[in-house]
Image 1 (cartoon, rainbow, N blue to C red):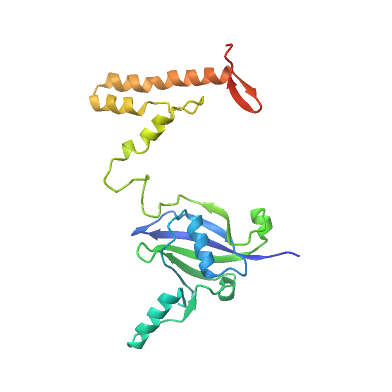
Image 2 (cartoon, one colour; image 1 turned 90 degrees about the horizontal axis):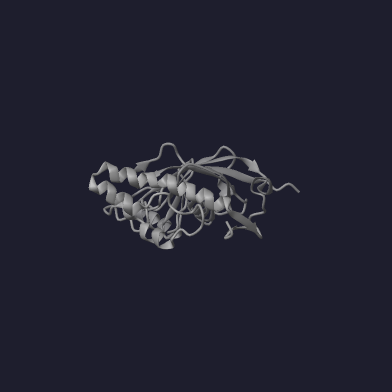
Length: 237
């Protein structure tokens, strides 16, 4: 029996006050039993978000809001004060019951940073054919673009103020880079000192070390012999 699931393309429009151009995206095979909440979580994971403790909200083509129960209660309470609210559907509702091929809807994660996505139901696909597996949950089978960090961090301890030049260098240098070909070509500490000195000769000397290290790496690989699929230096050379 040929199992067909909706294929939904998701384009990340932007967030944190930024509009992305070009837009990164993912295409998902979505099981008919999938809820909006499950689909939202799959989107967040596919877009490299690790803090999933924020609210999510979908808006369908006709203006219907798909929200959690607490948000729904707040919207209903606002209506008692004379306000108007659109139709509300819970996040536990199934995506397939409220969309069809050609449907377009919006997904927003973190109602503050407002990571906003354009979702389009493109067609139906066989999940086994597109993903090589029989997944039980919505699965991204196609993707493109550069994914921005959820909080705009460029390295682990980025606070928006610190100099990125030294980020992670201590850990990298402590590793020793003992494997052939895995050592950094330029000693970052030496290069920074040379640049700070303002002396062109010292900068040239630091950079010229690249050629020497490349030659050493080539010699190490050429003088190595394979053992059980591993490269082991030949000590008899």
